[in-house]
Length: 72
Image 1 (tube, helix red, strand yellow):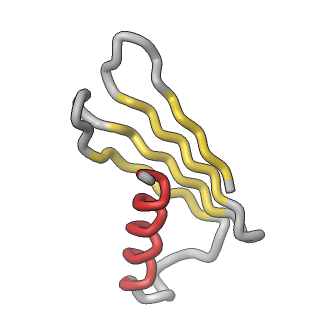
Image 2 (tube, one colour):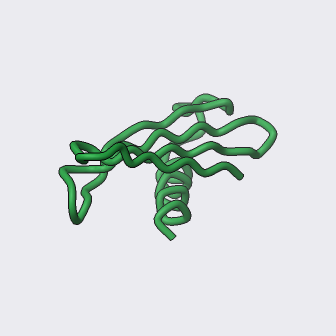
Image 3 (cartoon, helix red, strand yellow):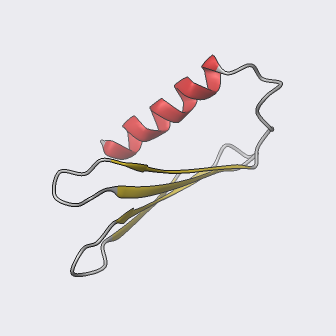
């Protein structure tokens, strides 16, 4: 669910920005979003020209490493 929401937010932001400002894929987006039980989650999204994406989410300051990867 979070993955779909993040991708939707990125695509909405991309649609709201003039196309001349954004480079065509491949493109990379990174940023931190709030987290309920940690200081934040670092998102790293790669968009590829063949309509494939790769999303990595890394939870900040966790006692054990929590990293989630999704591809599509």
